Length: 442
Image (cartoon, rainbow, N blue to C red; front, side, top):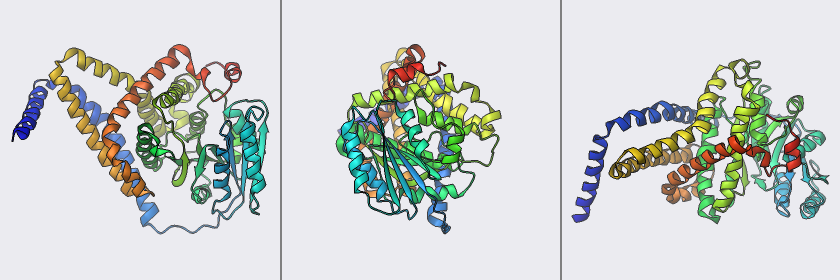
């Protein structure tokens, strides 16, 4: 009974603290219900629509089998590139697949180059061709992708990292989308391959499942997908050449997505789907230090692209009204301004309110966030997951995810400040310093 009395006392104290600080909720509730709730409804309704179209409606038969070119960007992956090439050779797609492994800096990455050569020599299927293209001097990720695009001859181009492998029906899942002439590009789904390696990889596996696979599935149904992943995307080759391929600087995936969306007003029927069931598997950062370095680059690049390189493009005259409004609210506000709001909000609570209230409101916020997280996690599992048992095994790690999400927000805040002050996009590992420094200044 004493334990029950203790629990009741805690809840009574929390209720008392919250009741005496109603002004706090005048600021908190609009933030949750006016900002977060509409996004959740858009994503949930989109996932329901995807589930109905994919699993309940009768699928349409198709004989569309264009040639597909897969460009693999290789740098220092060593023998891991053999797994990527093999997963593309073994695709069940009956059409022709051209696999172009572009080795950046082939002189200093001899093992990667030799491994790719071995995979090419081992390929003996009539409708599979492996081309190994060495770039003897390192030029960076963008030049590697464009070199592959120059040699590609397929109607559809799929870009992939050399540390990413694929389910053997990936190409078969991607190709039918391009039967619609109004699809210039699409995003592919990514999963964490080394999920059981550390707590950090488990958190990222949950993040990929909820935010990337679930979120992008829902948003794409309303043509609001925010980014085509650089590790796995597909494009119509003629269109990709027309817009000049990939561009220099950094964050080439978001850069290319923004440039594609600039055609939406002129072509209102265009759409960028998300191939939810086309699965790629990638190795996520194992340690917290590796993860932080990755996100510093991702989040800093985001500010550079939104506020420096592409700011003149953010107008309804190019993006169309719906894409413009969504990008303004959930591109600018969510990804750029929200980390500052959360930080200022948290510091303000600690500075202005007694510790009893800080503890109480922290428990309430955690409970609300975790409840929403649990619902969305189970919803995605039921509506989308093609690996239900594997994904369900992550549920015991879910209580830690709110702390992970808050920490990532603070990392994002630091990355944004770093880009503002130091132009950190010029220090990316995605290209040599002389390539980034010679690029146009924004």
